[in-house]
Length: 128
Image (cartoon, rainbow, N blue to C red; front, side, top):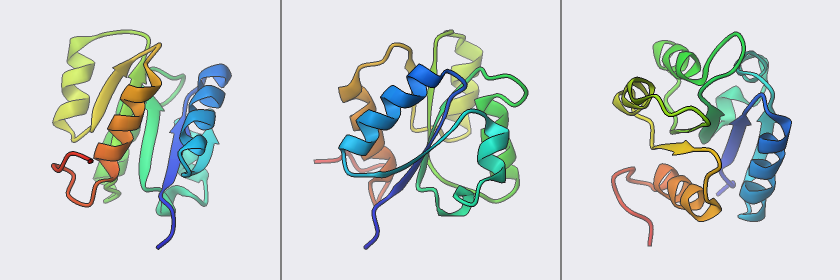
């Protein structure tokens, strides 16, 4: 079975690189993108297993990306990260099916647990 492909979308290059390093160290295939639009134009869109995205980005936000993908029939787990805690945005993300909504800076172990949950065969099942 092929390894899960994780797409990381964040306009902050340092956050993108740190998240990439962490997720790659877990053995996943990782593709990074500086914007939601770059991800949508990518050949990796259809092979993505999980998206880790910033909420607030120029042009298209992470929430708008999630809504766009759901509207076009792309259903894969979303993990949101943000430096700005806005309860309405968190509620919107979770209602649309997000696995996690993390505040920056986030703990690597928390992100790992979110990824395990997102990629579990039964998304409700907790990883062992």
